[in-house]
Length: 209
Image (tube, rainbow, N blue to C red):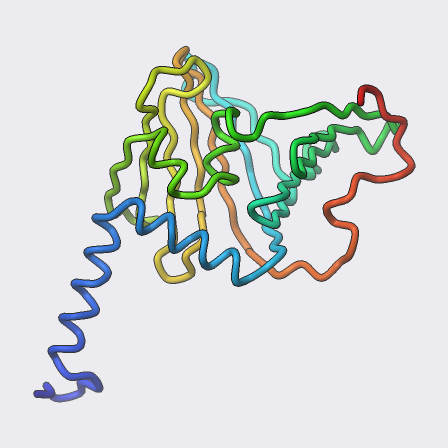
């Protein structure tokens, strides 16, 4: 049956609505959709703004820059404002450097036991064994909130807001047990074509491993 002006049968529209509602009610399904979308896209870049609000304050410091990732292997943050600095994590080695003074540090990271990083780098199946998940629909998209099954100092709660149309994370926020909050706003996703995006620069004087 078609109503005047409708291009789809009513039954199809009802089915689409129910499918979207089921996805919103299943937080793990929402996260699986994000992972599949990013895996299909390959190396991806985006713009980000980060706001850190200390416990007891209503506002905090804001930084911004470029984000790049090739999941589940690599993440890179290039901060440009107000001060340039870069972070790169590939495998179990992290690099942190300052483009201005040409120095940097590199160190080992246990990705599987690093709260926050695990949300982006571990499989959804692994996350199920660590977190309790709930979701709700909001103006910005579907918000998936994860709380640790076992108390940990670094993370009390994390929320990922997903745009259901693009299956991309548009906001990621953390709250630790002291009440400090960090929020990332992520926009303007694009496919990366430049080689060497996930290799540390060679003209940096490295300390550490």
